[in-house]
Image (cartoon, rainbow, N blue to C red):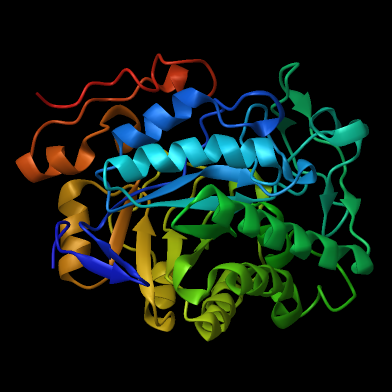
Length: 359
């Protein structure tokens, strides 16, 4: 098995095991409507076995950053439909990543200046990115128990919108300290109702949201992303081994398309492990479906991990930013172009659609 071995996930035959990882690029237009330039960006990368879009908010309440796309109203659906059609024209497959920022937001990004919501009223350290520049995070409002079903319904509605846009599937973003992760980890969840306390209770929101999305899409076209070793956005847990082992085992009940695991600490990108983390190995062993590894992979390491059956697919982030033809470069063992980090977030074509493919 190698990067170019085909793989069947659900109803789809992936032409390779090279996945484009979700990456926030902040190029959406007003009200979270995908900008036409995004169709070009994703189409250029359609040779990936699977594209997973940037984090896409499921509601106005779910927004966490300026100029990120949504998937909850007709204009957004129309914008995404153009993106999906562009990818399909090149024979690509594309899943949308469903996202709710939870406490990683700011009143200036919320409708009516509302305070962001979270499982518990625990303020994140650091600053939010806003249209007016960096601003300190605020203390979020703890959700009432009877509000939580409404957010689960937001996931179902966004999943329905994704179906209307023509996506091939969806990924539920349960990683990186956003709302499902805030419920899951006890550093951000001090609730005393049936969504807090035990790991079974803390995992309840993740599982309910997954169930709602599966109800729309069917189990074989839904993936979930987790980040068991990441402290990004100030996320912590007193016993991450137990927490994420339980989550992976519980997700088996859905028979999902895949589990997508970030295998390094996104809060410290300079420290990239050369081998799979212990927690990632445990999750790989526990999860019965296809497993996508992410984090610090290069072509050689990805091949080694595939040969050892440590992963079924590998997702690449920054390498896809500056190498739209990444699978071809891997196949030819060609040098990779370095990305321009100053253009990662926001802007136009520069650093987005102007990276050339190999001649």
